[in-house]
Length: 310
Image 1 (cartoon, rainbow, N blue to C red):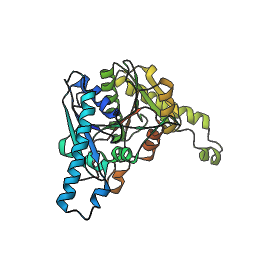
Image 2: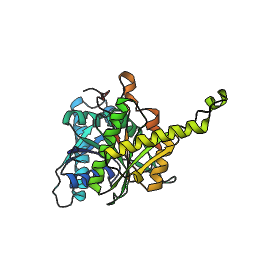
Image 3: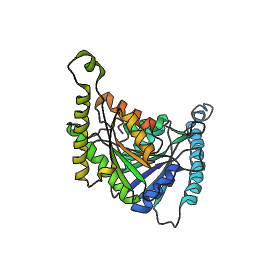
Image 4: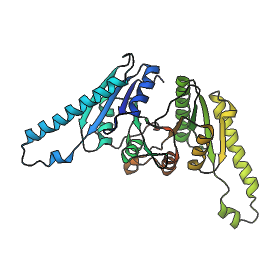
């Protein structure tokens, strides 16, 4: 966990209980990291007060910032325990919260962004807001999306891997995700689980090629992924009982295993892209994240280029 020494906790403007701050402080207590409580505010009505001068509008905006800074200071004070954690407060006026967060990360070299998710009261499921998705797609640092629950000692942590790949970038991302899972497991005295899905037999091949044996093909694919998983797990000394290789789509397999073992945290890698596609993290990752009902840590691959420039 030593790689997370500077944490940015994204504050929700309308909530008294801040999940992101609680989780950031929990990590900081165990790692000695510093925490910044970061709030973005904006009210379009202040920009439309045309009868006021520029200086008067700026004075009004600053008054709102000062008021919210005092509000946040009270929340931070009530959240701190013995005062051993270094915590700063920052409130900025910006009409795009995700951009202000990313600018803050770029300017001050944070190691981790922590943001709370919203809960749908009727469906009892996690809702990911547009700001969440923008941060997952574009932020240059790892993003931890948290829900309101404890991280118990001995909890279950999932590293989502793709061990059947021959692509070097994906293999590197497997290592990054697994190492992160081991770091969190060390911090929480938890257990690392590796989860890998593999595709079933393509239906069109089975239909178009009469001599094709789908059962043998499926068994061959399964064995390949099982062997690849064993090799990957052995490199990191992870017990084979904690390795899950399942047939199906990642967006079905990962949530299923997470529910089965009651995972506290799922760590997933996102695909790095160039140009206009840099704003995407891939349909697979997005579908997986959207179905998870626990904390999610999204990691970028090596060489990821943030599409938002200062």
